[in-house]
View 1: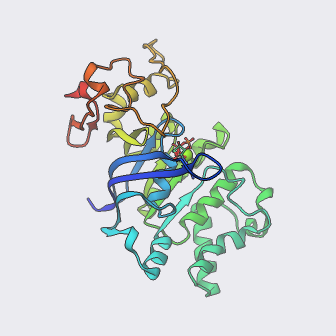
View 2: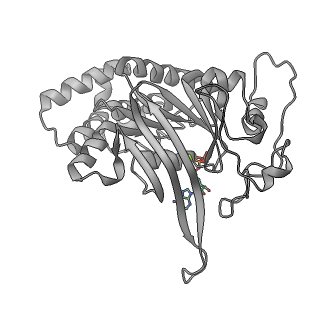
View 3: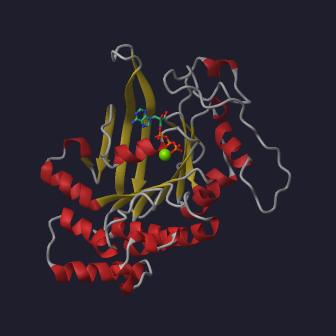
Length: 320
Ligand SMILES: Nc1ncnc2c1ncn2[C@@H]1O[C@H](COP(=O)(O)OP(=O)(O)OP(=O)(O)O)[C@@H](O)[C@H]1O
Ligand SMILES: [Mg+2]
């Protein structure tokens, strides 16, 4: 399968000065040794608690945030060494869908101007081409011609997110990061948007990193799922492998608290304490401080990835 994104040993830390003089610099270790591939026409779901580094990963992959160490390849090319023209092409071929459609659309612009923006950025001025493509996209996302003359406030949250998605797909991108694209929406609207995303994926041959903390949504939209904890991928696999046969205690804990329709009264694993400080990461397995099954060696030794199948990998000694 064609690899669209390859991430190799990616580290990202934010430097944070702690006193007035900027001395005593501390680092937030947001991403720690990420290795990941995203193949053509797949949706990779990314889940994990707040603060585990999901958005940071999304921003690094889109070159919106500089990385500290490692390599990110887009269609085989290192994105950190792109020249000006290549960066422009990269921006054209990638896009981001934000969480909040109330904030991502300029309230002073008409929908037509919002949708025209990507063309301007890419120096496309031919009105006919612009008009035709906008009409095409309007059809895809089921908005009406008459909507083009309106302002964002005239639309509901779901419609606004459709407009934001329209803008994101305007240039026919090869890769999209959707960062919690439905979390700000009513539950009743969420499935509409999710179905639209799946539909677009098929029609446009899209590849997507889909960030969400809602496991039910991730299960529905993703082909593969990666579970993140303190800036590491602790488990990754095909959707069914991960949901039917989770291996990592953290994944099990996340899954055990997801509300189910036929709740068979399975035991819930409630994690103690909050996420440890990303300033000082725990030694050994980063999850050992909260893991109900931690062994002595987990406190000092870092586990490697153990493979269950060719596609299912878990970073935990219990899988040895
Ligand atoms: N610009 C920044 N400067 C300093 N620290 C940052 C910055 N952005 C993120 N962080 C820190 O990096 C870590 C990862 O943050 P990130 O926003 O990627 O998490 P997340 O998984 O997207 O969380 P959420 O689910 O709440 O959106 C957190 O500890 C966060 O505080
Ligand atoms: Mg985030």
